[in-house]
Amino acid sequence: MKKGRVVVGLSGGVDSAVSALLLKQQGWEVIGVFMNNWEETDENGACTAVDDWGDVRDVCDRIGIPYYSVNFAKDYLDRVFSYFLEEYRKGRTPNPDVLCNREIKFKAFLDLALQLDAEKMATGHFVRTDADGHLLRGVDPNKDQSYFLYMVHDTQLKNAIFPVGGMTKAEVRRIAAENGLPVSAKKDSTGICFIGERKFKAFLKNYLPAQPGDMVTPEGVRVGRHDGLMYYTLGQRRGLGIGGCGDGRSWFVVGKDLPGNRLIVVQGEDHPLLYTTRAVCSDVTWVSEPLPEGVPTACTCKYRYRQADQPVTALLEGDRLTLCSAVPQRAVTPGQSAVLYQGERCIGGGIVDLADNG
Image 1 (tube, rainbow, N blue to C red):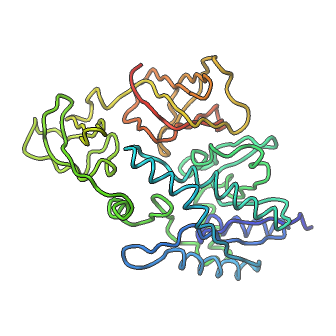
Image 2 (cartoon, rainbow, N blue to C red):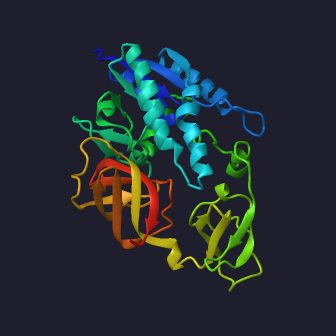
Image 3 (cartoon, one colour):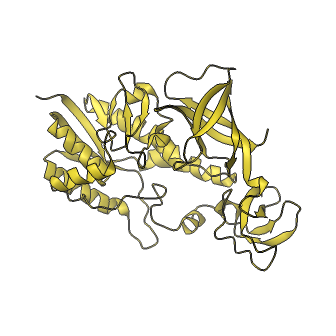
């Protein structure tokens, strides 16, 4: 029995491929669409989009569905990449993937699906939704991607299907192999979407001028040189190149002095300056209803994708969200997304502006 038309965003990976397969088996009229969001080549002159597009064609031929390629590169540059660069200019550490989901996959791509008279759009995200459009964690705790979708509203989610959200990654690969999908063993993509496997430092240098400066302790003692503040993030230990000074313990980044172009570093992984108990966020968005304004609310938070849930008290005041934790949080970084949960529901979040101890 046909259920109607659904447009599936195909990345060339196994998750979206299995999503398309399952929808076809369920009786949907499935159209596969490859989103080309990035056209630049890597340092070897290769564009991964070419290989991914080839995998999409092979998958769709195997499943027996029509497929198209759409170019959202200009939208991506205007709506996502420009923000990414501006945040790094400010010495912050942005997460462009959350903005890509809001601006490209659940806006530009959703608009395209509706123009194709589709009843639904679908992606290979490991998330679930309920009948009210609430965003729920994926069943596989190691693959749950709700963190990256917290900027998507319930009105958009009601138009979306996530066929693999109730599965584990092992189940997805098994289904792909059993049905002869050519990407069943394809390696998962890692890193920022448009950078991929490339070295981040070399990539960023192509777009922002490097301004080397001093590495100093909080007391102002010079201990080394940095290659440019944009290349470092709070809590970073690797790649500092500080040797022959101090007490022998590892050095960590704890701050950036933008006016002075100085990187602030300390020794010891338990240094107090690595930990904070309060984060103030802006650009606050809610999947559905917001938290009550002016009322401290208990929930949990992730400051990073792979982080375990952290109990916090959230206070919404106008367009600012303050998160307080009884347990000090390590290396909460301006530019990061602080994503809130109530049980299985992802309710929203904001962009960290300030982290301190109140």
